[in-house]
Amino acid sequence: MAQNLPLHVDPGAREEVFDTSAVPALRFLTTADFPPFNYTDGAGNLVGFNIDLANAICMRLSASCTIQAWPWDTVQDALADNQGDALIAGLAIDGQSGSRFDFSRIYLELPARFVASADTAPLFSPRRLTGPLGVRQGTPHAQLARRLLPNVEIIEFPSELAALEALAREDIAAFFGDGMRAAFWLNENDDCCAFAGEAYFRPDLFGSGFAVAVPAGLDNVRAAINWALIRLAREGRLDELYLRWFPVSFY
Image 1 (cartoon, rainbow, N blue to C red):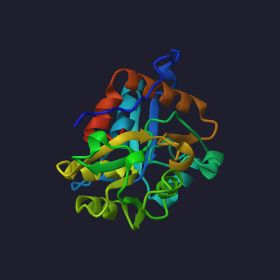
Image 2: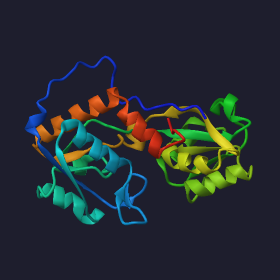
Image 3: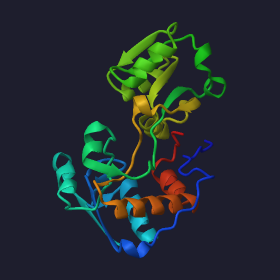
C-alpha cells in the first residue's frame, strides 16, 4: 500500500534560531491508557508514538528527559502545578485547555477518510456513491456526510469497528469516519478494503490535531519543543516514527 506522509513543516518556513542550552532538561507528563500513543506494554513499560516523540525531542535538544505517567483526571492539574514542563497525551486544543496552557505547533492532524472495498477504492468518488454509507452515530463525520451527501443513504453504527465490519460483509458500500481508527482496522483487513479518495482535514469539525501542552507562560520550553519538532520533521525522523506506529497511513 502506497504511503502518504503527513506534511509536518511548511517547506517555505524560515529557519529559526534557538539556543538549546536554554533548556537542559525536560519533564514530560503523559498517561498510560491511550494506545498507540501512550500506554504500558505487557512488561509494564511506557511506550507509544508520543513516548518515542518525547524522547526524540529531548535527544534533538541534547536535554535530559523524564517521562512520567499520570491518571488522565489529574494530569492536567499536575501540569498546571508545574509538576512537569510539558504534557504529551493528546489533550484537545479547545477553549478550556487554551485558557490554562500554551501549545506547541501541531505535530499530527487527524483527518477523516472514506473506506471502500479493495475493488472499488481506486476509482472511488463520493459524488458517484449509490450504495449506503456507514458512519459512527453522533460524530462530526456523520453530520458532515449528511450535509455533503444529501442523496446518499446514511446508516449509523455504534462504533467505527461496527461500520467497518459491515463494509467487510458488503452491507454498506463505503465508510466515512476517523482515519486513524480506520487505519488500525485496515492493518488487519487490507485484503478486503482500502482507503478511498483523499484525506479530509476540517479542524473546525475534527479538532486541530495533536500538540504538546506547556504551562502558560513557559515560553522557553514551548520554543524549544517547536524548534525540535521542525528539525525532526526536516530530518525525516517524524516520518520514521509515524510509519513505525501507523504502518497503514491515514493520510
